[in-house]
Length: 485
Image 1 (cartoon, rainbow, N blue to C red):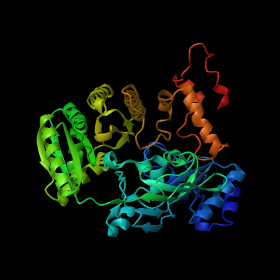
Image 2: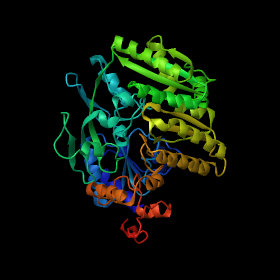
Image 3: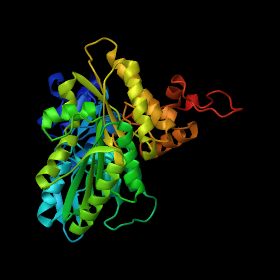
Image 4: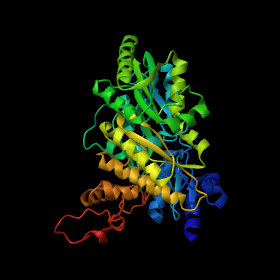
């Protein structure tokens, strides 16, 4: 309590009273991000309005050795913004200005609290938009997108956040300002821009982002294909990519998902199909017409029982609205859901889907499968009821097995949601001891006292040993590195 009072006193020397929250009823709304199964009340919440205020806050945290956890819009799904009980929650929600748009250079300078969709809305008069479009784009902030390296339904063709930013302004835990990247396509030295993107607020606090803007395509059209067997849908994805086509987006949903979505959004989906695929082409009129014809043919050859092509822009938007509403739709059919995030090689889609189906039967828990099929990024939503004793733990075990299945298939435990606290145990399975040591060394180079978002993303070697997932080479003493962390 003394730490809290001292911190409040110091912060209020340069922040207004309303920007420093410490009463329980004031900090309670910040107890979790989108992964609401995990909750922790922060000691203090600070709401700076400027970059200079963020710097001063970090200097105070560093001087008092107070952990600091950055938070954007709170839409993250891995517990990355879960507060520290003896730390400060640093909300960047008030840094929400679009600082400038350079239509000629196709760039925009924005503060971290700017919503993803707001960038495209501001760029629309110039015929431009910001391509990465997470399902939460109406609410999620660009700073959070950078922290998690978010993607979206169009990331197959246009890339993740890391492919669509040029420069960052970042503050270290000491309050020192760094400019990473450049206004050009390349910058001298190590690629710290890629390192910072996806670092989950553990290396520095982003205060400004220069994003790339993309010209609006002349035309966009969607093929909606229905399949009686989910494996056929998985194989259709591989067949489209194998034909040399890179769609603007390619998404898959299974029957339980389309049923929930159709009742919620009325997107016009076939709710009897085992799975549906949405495959979009964009570009010039002639290019889209030719590509749509080829996609239509491939879908039918792959076993599609129904193929529909969006007739106009309104129908195209409606098809995508259903996919982007999958997560809220899950909340209508189950008291709780646990959203997983793993990535696998496209060629293994069918077998992994079959594995998830088997796990669903084994655990007696329904699972909605919805994912970025084109790049193999799975988002199984395990449906459960937290009011039933032990069901959350059962759900977590089910999810952990899905992630191990992703690793065994040659994939990874995350595609865009980050590791946070949700997948930290699975990091022990994904990486060897030497790799984890290197991650800790990178963290120490930026934040030697581990004050920025501590306990997230990178497991200690002790944790991996306790999980039985330590990688020990033959001939070495068992767990010789444990005392290091």
